[in-house]
Image 1 (tube, rainbow, N blue to C red):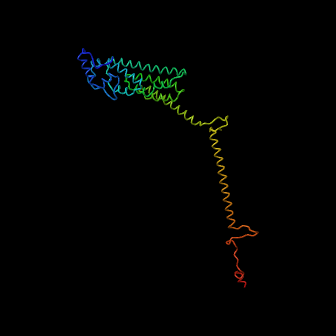
Image 2: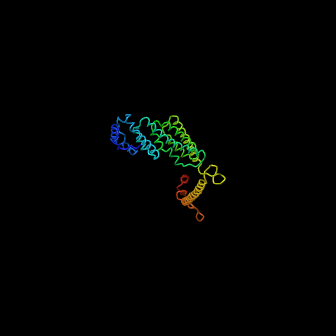
Image 3: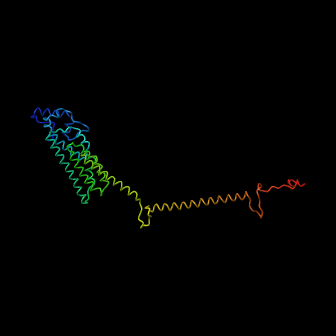
Length: 307
């Protein structure tokens, strides 16, 4: 039932008073008329909103708008709308509240049924639309589920267990997507046992992924020995080629250094020969410091004594 500001003049004085109350609450009147809430706006804190007579009056209008707004938030992945709905009072009496929650639950059960369909296809190794699948565990979906009232705690837990089944079937086909789904699921508010099971599955898949990454990284890019491009060490032929080229360059450098040293040695020998003496025309020439000293006979001490 759509709420309208104008009403027939034949309504009771009580209904007129309730309509005036709604008109004086911009956030509430805007929600009833449009099905949306302006960002961070809250309904007025009127004591009358708790009056059973007021709840009986507004419930038929509020019920339809409330259910449509929540289902629209899920369809549009609109977490802002869900957040604004969650911070405001649910203006429904007991009967309409139960009916509204049943309507929302029926919508959510359809989403869960879609998940079960994905699970069946994975079990049968049939192709699936990964993008459509991941929407069921996207952060927008998880956030909107968390914004629902406490009455939906049981549904959140059963929904989480269905996602876990899907993840277990998906992990061998697409480990990365499975890890993303289970990591998002860790943020869902569920009962303690389900939370522990979700956490355990996340740790298991994450550990397996890290192990696979480590094993693939340790394998390098080596080929089998049959190809002749690698040895038992597992390195690729590119590494061997680089070693060979490096050894060849090293050999050239060694030859050049050896030649330079050889030239230096020759030059030193020539200089040494020039300073120490070398053969010329059958005789030797000596450096002055190496010429034997000569004393005339008259100056020799033994000669003087004999005289």
